[in-house]
Image 1 (spheres, rainbow, N blue to C red):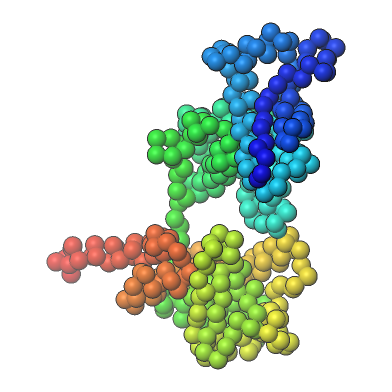
Image 2: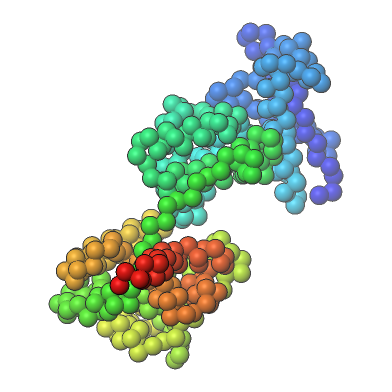
Amino acid sequence: MGNKVSTSIVLYKSQTKKNGKHPAKLRVTYNRKQMYYSIDTKDRIYEFTPSDFEKVRTPKPRGLNKDIQLEFSMIETKAQKIIGSMNDFSFKQFKSKFGIAGGDLSNILFFFKRRIKEFEDNGQVCSRAQYMTAQRTLQKYFNTTTRLDFREITVNELEKYERWMLDRNLSMSSVHNYMVPVRSIFKIAHNDGTIPRDLYPFGMKGYKIPQGQNIKKALKINEIEKIYNFECEYLSDQDKARDLWLFSYLLNGANINDIARLKFRNINKDFITFIRHKTLKTSKNAKPISVPYTEELRRLIEKWANTDRSPSNYIFDILKDDLSPYQTRCALNNCIKRINRHIKNIANEIGIEKHITTYTARHSFSTVLKRSGISTEFIGESLGHNDLKTTELYLDSFEDDMKKDVAKYLTAFRD
C-alpha cells in the first residue's frame, strides 16, 4: 500500500450531545483525508466531556477508564489488522470490512453471530449447527441473550461451566463439542487483534477441554459375515441399507457423506479413487484414497447404481447437483437414519448385541485390518487420516479386546 493509513480514537467535538458531551470516534487518515466512524455498540455509548476523555487517555487510567482504554486499544488494533489486509485502501472498503455500526468487539456473542453467518454463507451446515448449540448453551449458563464480555470467561468460569453441563446429564463428548467453538472464537478474536493474549483462558496453563468419551466398538469378522449373509427381501429398503453399510466397510470405511458424493468418474478399471469431503476445507494437501475395485464392490454398484452412468453423475441416488447445502445435509441425514434403523434391526435378529451404526463400518474396517497384522500407518492412510493419533483412536476397540485376551493367560493354570 503506497501511502500510510493512520488511525486514532479521538473526541469528535464537532458533534455535541444534549447532555453536553461529545462522541468518541475512530479517525482514519489516508492521503490527507480524514474520515470518522462511530464506535458505539448496543451496550456501550462512548461519549465524554473533554476532561473525562483525558482521564481515559492518561498513561495509567483506573477503574472504568482502564476498561475503556483497553476497548479503545482493541478497536484500533482491529482497524489496523483490516487495513493491513487490504491491497488498495479505500474508505468504503474499510467501512464494509470493519462493520463499525454495531460491531461489539469485546462481546463474544457478536463473534459467534459473525462466525455462524460465515458458516451459513459457505454452506457448512454441520459447523453452523454446532456453533449455534454451543452459543445457546453458553448464553443459558451466563443467563444472557445479548452480551457476554470476553473477560467474563475465565479459567475458573470455564471449569464451573463444565461442571454445570455435567450436572445436567450432558455427556463428556457434548462438553467437548460445546467448548471447542468457544476456544475457536477466542482464537479468532485474538488473531483479529480484538483481545489481548492474556485474556485467552485455554492452553497449557489454562483450561483444558476434556476429550470426548470413546465408545467406538468394532465388529469382529464373524459378526460382519452374519450381516453379509443375512437374507433380506431383494431390493427392499432393508436390503439397500444392509448393502450400503457393507459398501462403507469395503470402501476403506468411507462414511456416507463420501459415498453419497461418489460419481462414476471416480471409478476406473482397477480402483475407486476419492478425496474425503471432510478434508477438502480443512487440509490443503488432502490425499486421494484409492480402493481396489473388487468384485464385491462391483456387485453392489451394479445392483444399486443410477442407470445414467455419465462420468459426472452420482453413483447412488442419495444426492442431486441442484440441492442447497441445507437440502444436502437433510438428504445425508435421512440416508444415515434409514441405514442405522435397518442395520440395528438386522443386528437384533442375528444376535449381535452391540450398538451398530454407519460409523461401526468404519471402525470395523480398521480393526479387522489390525487383527490381520496390517500396520497402523497403512490403516491410517487407508482411512484418510493425517495424524497417527486419530488412527489409534479407531483401534481402541481392538486394543480393549486384546487386553481381555491377554488377561486370560494370567489364570491359564485354572484350565
